[in-house]
Amino acid sequence: MSKLKIGIIGTGGIATWAHAPGYQSVPDDCEIVWACDIKEDVLTKYADDLDIKNRTTDYKDILNDPEVDAVSVCTPNIAHMQPAVDALNAGKHVLCEKPLAMNADEARQICRAAENSGKILQVGLQQRFTAEGQFMRQYIDTGAMGDIYYARAQALRRRGVPGWGVFIHKDLQGGGPLIDIGVHILDFTLSMMGYPKPVSASGKTWDILGKNPELWNGLGDYNRDDFTVEDLAVGFIRFENDAVVVLESSFMGNQDGDPYGTNLYGTKAGASVYFGDPGITIFTEENKQLFNMKPANMPDVPSAHVVEVQKFINAIKNGEPSPVPGLNGLILNATFDALYKSTVTGKEEPIDVSF
Ligand SMILES: NC(=O)c1ccc[n+]([C@@H]2O[C@H](COP(=O)([O-])OP(=O)(O)OC[C@H]3O[C@@H](n4cnc5c(N)ncnc54)[C@H](O)[C@@H]3O)[C@@H](O)[C@H]2O)c1
Image (cartoon, rainbow, N blue to C red; front, side, top):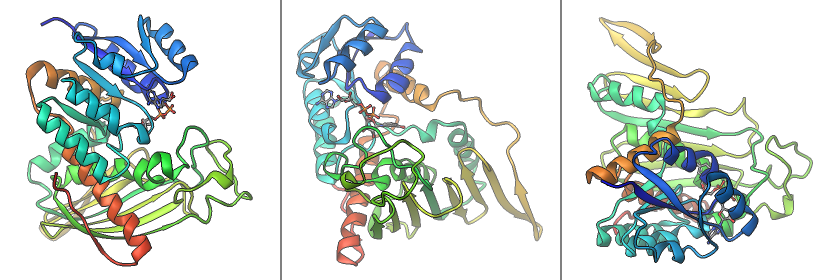
């Protein structure tokens, strides 16, 4: 099989430090042949650095090239849906950054396009490919945890509003920490639980700290008047299989540090899985004795982003299903829609993941 030809749509941060190294890590299998960005200077730097000859400010040029097999959609959330749908309709495989879309309606359109085209749609959710994800997958698959019926997931930053990009603009992002970093930890949690189907959710968001110009921010400065997203979101999500997930996500919150991980409650064992310190702890009982276990042979995974891209390429080459299916992205978007709606209505809201 000849090398797969790849186009990159949106050549900013994630395209530079995640997608490019991912494709470059398998040079016998693929090559980046097109780069697209609406900002000429960003495009030129990216294409020059990677020696990409075909450059455009209109992604449709990439889709019109019959040689192109697949695209990475690395644009801000507002510009995920249209390029993804157009690419799938043009017969290209799509690796679309997270969140899949601004909301469930958009996510549905992308999933439908993938189903109609028969092409691979992979969502850029890489946490499950981390060392922690691979370790826990193997442990859970042995049955050692039993059924996981409850989880408490946290993606919390004490003072971490992104001071770059469009992350504080609700109209361009669809939301704040919930949709930006909560998406990763909820995806990780649900993938560990076997991706149960959510049925309803109750949530609450605040934006008090994020708008306060007096407060220090650890990720660069930003105009407090432009802050239109939440700074903290909490949610209670019910699933068809009777499981529940409690989710907390913040860009700013008066808590101890930046906990980023999940706590899984199984019928046979529990696990606390944090990225970075304190890592993984597994809680078991044997013969009425309680044990807290730490892993001693974690897999060596230098970059989960690279693994993600390699899995995308392998799935295309081998005709395998998407490593992170569009439906996962739709489930996440539909859950966030319900949580955002609930904060307005004050009620538990239904979640519809049909498409
Ligand atoms: N998976 C992860 O861990 C991870 C990490 C960071 C960002 N992301 C996601 O990646 C996406 C991009 O984030 P980023 O940090 O790279 O942002 P960025 O602002 O650095 O880059 C986005 C680029 O897209 C370009 N762009 C905007 N609209 C376009 C269009 N219609 N056509 C072509 N180019 C267009 C912009 O000019 C910009 O250069 C977001 O959806 C974000 O959520 C994912």
